[in-house]
Image (cartoon, rainbow, N blue to C red; front, side):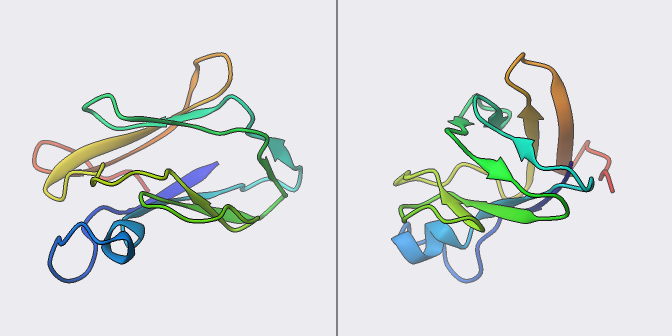
Length: 116
């Protein structure tokens, strides 16, 4: 599993749903096998948590988790929040499996080393 983040949505932070949905985390399944993400979590440094519910990610597939409100599809999931989650300057996105084990982290900003 590999992640990418767009923490700072383009333009002004107006808190419109369009702006909130331009803030996202992307997960890519590097393996050929599908992964059941049911019960997995995505969390920021401040403790905001998104829990995956009945999501299956096909092999080599990518899903984008948007901050704002929307209708979930195979390629796009929505946290249904009305405020930003990811800090523009510095934060860490942590993906944990349904047993609480860290699967991947993606950090950016001061004091963080970018993982690739």
